[in-house]
Image 1 (tube, rainbow, N blue to C red):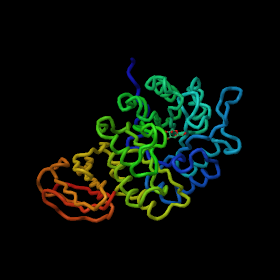
Image 2: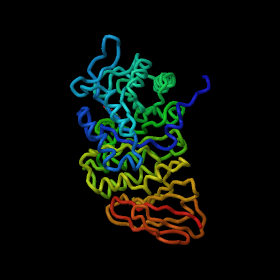
Image 3: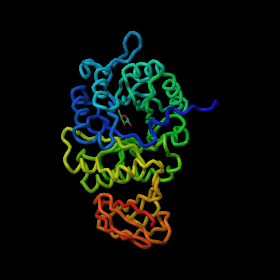
Image 4: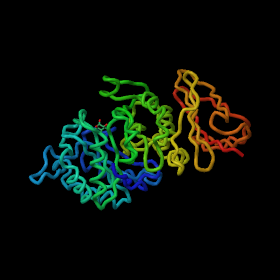
Length: 379
Ligand code: GLA
């Protein structure tokens, strides 16, 4: 194998942030709604908080290619075409992502890319696409590293730098090969807007809840770093299936995991609570920390867990997580999070409040299905 030229690692020096149509709209998308969503990304304050990519997921295409084999946008859903939409998105200071599939068909049964990787990469570049999510439906018997590697070659061959999002659902241990091929890779079947849930086929059909996805991230820390991220799937914050406390936990845990932060709610009618969760600067700063170290679970006692993520300034971000059905005191010993036994400064990130200097450790009172998120710095 020849040495691998990395695919523009600078595009994802920190985990990509954006919005994607799938979690809220599924295949029910059109350019008018997306036009409004681009406006809402800016007007809601999401762009200022760091959300940069607007990703059109499945169902943007016509059911067949044109006579030259080029993909066509669905003429009813996208009468002005993708290029015009890309121009609108770029005019807002945002970037555009698009969805395709490595096989013959997308998961929604639209034309896949198989046999057309080069052609599709060039077409997307000509439209001004900045981010490609590449799915794995109708590929079950194919070789994932080889096919994703082929699309990576095609992307390397075009002028336009694109983030490459690998979406094969963790089926072929992508963390072992995807870091050399793309910028992020899904680690599980699809997320669903539920706390604790395993759909049919162990989540293949019907998806996985938040805690079920979380448990599948154990052991993956070492594969992530600047330019290469484990992707526990897009955010469900604001979609209505969980409580505000649960959404805050979902977001905190994704940030401690250094996960890509791809919102999936209807930004045109986002409530204040969802906005406060999705745009909390101090919590997002943990996700986007320049050291790019994925957090890991450092302690588990029944339903109480501690997750910790070392930060570039020597501090440690900590999530005290209570999965249980009653409020709990969680004891966080400084040694458990990699600090010495001395005194440390503690800040409550959700409250935006300094809790002062604390020796040896901290005891947090954590609500049912809730978190307390701290930044701890030795002094
Ligand atoms: C798969 C992916 C999802 C979404 C759908 C679209 O299920 O994992 O994220 O892109 O396909 O059909």
